Image 1: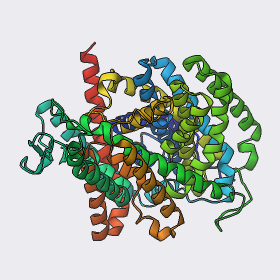
Image 2: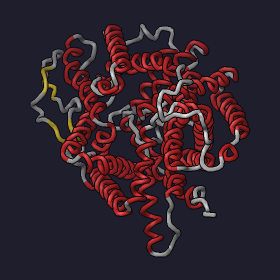
Image 3: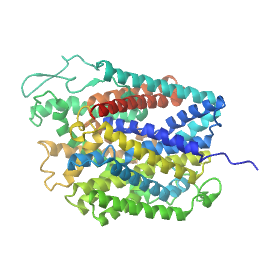
Length: 594
């Protein structure tokens, strides 16, 4: 009888643990810079393949098997997805509002508990979404295809690894030169291009407003990853917010000319309101429209679905018992309820409601992510903020940290479902993947929280600046303060009320249009979330993301096969390389201040 291929080996877990610990800070850095993060599954699979099979080639290690690699990527992607537990949104927003920063042990424990809740919610919805509905989970399919491809064509794997490493080294080198040798110039129009300030008649250049291309390859990488729809939507938002609006806002005296020449701060205090309204209205509308599809979950919408649940391969139920799920759910409930009460002084009944809401929203997150590949963490967090603004009025801490539980659980749930889809396609064992995911969130909690505290040692002075825009932090903070303030509507800047109403209407329209159009036409509808993001992000971030997306389009037109194989790998290298260099710079700065 032939032995089953090795899966849950010590080196598979260890490799995923350390790769995840290395890659998690990349997403922390990138998330605080741009609000965007990326899936690390393919990068982890390629790096581990290159390392272990090179050692195997020289007789220093056993062959690194396909299923071992899957356990590695499951653990590494879980670690990198730790940002969904709040490190780039509600946690820094809580610090900015309360002035309280959590100590490292408490922060790591909180992030782990929130992420563990996501694993439990994923197990609750897995059978329906993966087995019965057979949703595609595109990231999971892409990872499975990549793993199969590199094991079917070894030379192809080495080539992809080279592209990943070379692009990472180039991006890191550029970042380090810019930081430590001499400041590299940004690219943009000459300063004579701009407009006349209606308030004082002085010339305002487009470059002063941030309309330039910084010496950063990370943003180009993000553009190639997110693709043309998001890239074009960001450009639309940038043109509206940072090209058309400034002169009008100055003319109406809704924005004052900054005495220090810092235009970003002067404008974003007004622009964030229509931007957030656009995103929240679109998110809530999409949520409402998706509920109809959620309640149809019992129907097998995909001919590939099946009511037979092998739970999974090989060995059936004995590989993952419902009893273990029940035990995990109880542990998760107790942990998340006690943590909310002990750390944030949230009433126990509210903490319990947050846990229950996590399971409802996990269904939405799993289905949306399963169909589109995008986990609607921010949208689901806003829904929770609205709910707890009613249940706990005036309590900004409860508003933020209950939403942290539901949004974080939804994010980790989505990540695990994509990994389980990969496992299903390549014949992996369910229980082994769950164990790998648990080790992954442990690695992410330890490394991610350490990276966050090192990168941003002083959130009050560092965040919500041009260097660290932290758009997700700004959104969560603003929504919490507005919902907790009885006069929030009246406290809006002059002229914002009409802008909020118009932006919300556009967000609703775009969400409805996207929902009811045929699948082939949906990509033609601009992304409301991305347009709203551009109202908050500095234009120097949005412009290179747009250009990166256009490079991907051009590469696909020139050679679709080459682009499919390598463009995402190269883009991932650019993001990871610059992020690691940025983390290194932050570590040096941290130790210099000791």
